[in-house]
Length: 146
Image 1 (cartoon, rainbow, N blue to C red):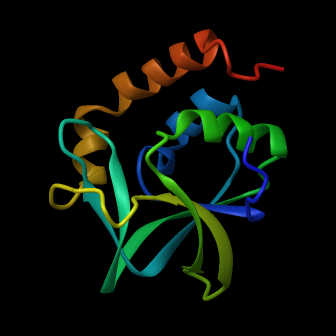
Image 2 (image 1 turned 90 degrees about the vertical axis):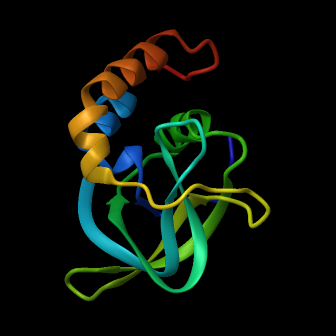
Image 3 (image 1 turned 30 degrees about the vertical axis):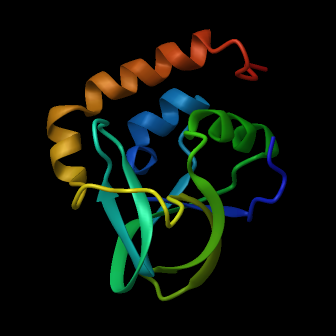
């Protein structure tokens, strides 16, 4: 388990959907709409989930998730692909609060494929993806289920 997490997470991809987080953590943590400056949510080749990249002048939308326990962070660490880097970003909430957040983002050397659409993912893939997460969570041999 990584132990260098901030108290909050910035989620911009599949974890921005409560259905996925509930399937993963068996509860719905506190969500708050937020943005991160100088970042962009991008599509990845051959997969249905996105990455976050640094792009000056762009703004990534997502959510601040608070109240994650160390146990829940360990589950999220297992869920996220190994190619992501764990970084700290400052997210701005709709209420104007600046929140230091842990985020999984792409390394600068990784290629990406245009923008990722949360609306298209929600319409076309969310139900199936959330069901897959539930199965993964129940069967992943290294997933800490207790």
